[in-house]
Length: 381
Image 1: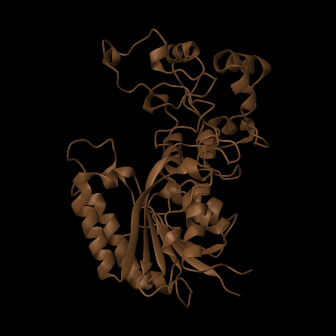
Image 2: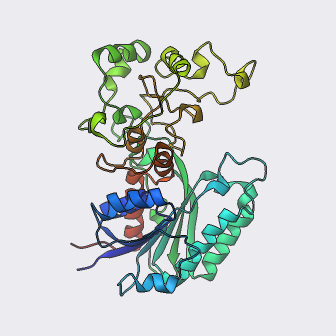
């Protein structure tokens, strides 16, 4: 029996791990500093799906890697090292040259301490598009240099969009693939080929955000039809087989003030702050920025990028498509293609952070299966 083995660093709530498990990969170990994310990982990945996975709820800088390897009870060659180091240092919210030489970027370098000890056939690193900005070129060059010194050939970085891989979300992320020198692999398979496309006859289409919402009432559907029109409304697919939100511990949303709720009531289907008379002081006059804040999720398009503030309408287009409050953690998790039985722990802020930082599960599956095909490893049950 041949098994494919992986280790997940900076695993968060477990989106990438779940993608790996769904692809037939055995997760030997996972590392995560955040207590709430670790609790979520244990509950959903280990207790429900992978009892043999060893979770290290520790600071990755404090881990003795030799001791770490000794605790894995594993002999043989590691196939994959996966993980998305925290990306705040490259975030688009950091302006000018903020983020250059950010100490958090050292987490990527720490990644190579594990690469050099575990010597996987391949490693996959995920980050935000800001990694590709010119101001970070010297850092990325250093990353490639260390990869070369460690005995790995780098493919990428490439920017991929989750909507092209069956995720109902417009979410761009950067992926870097490293393959150990000497491994035979088919480089023509990277980057992964898209599985979903702009609406066109005969091809799987991008999935719309409507899929993450429960079926609207007749009255709510009439309001949707008034704005979107009969033709578009008929093409919408609302969630099938979804767990009722009343029975879901992750179906929590922000509690808004009465004044804010009144503004939401005035916001039409598909609308945003620009469609109502009220203006915040920072938005008066000719200010044209932040048009999506306090905006409703558009039903007939892939959803917006789920950030760590995905539950807060003041952070983006995170207002429920027709109800008068922000989307719930469950809606955000569905946009990230987490399954219905995946329950997050902690308060709403920590849950939002876990969802927003995750690799979308369906996207992760395509990436991991592509890499396994490239290096010619497949699990055999």
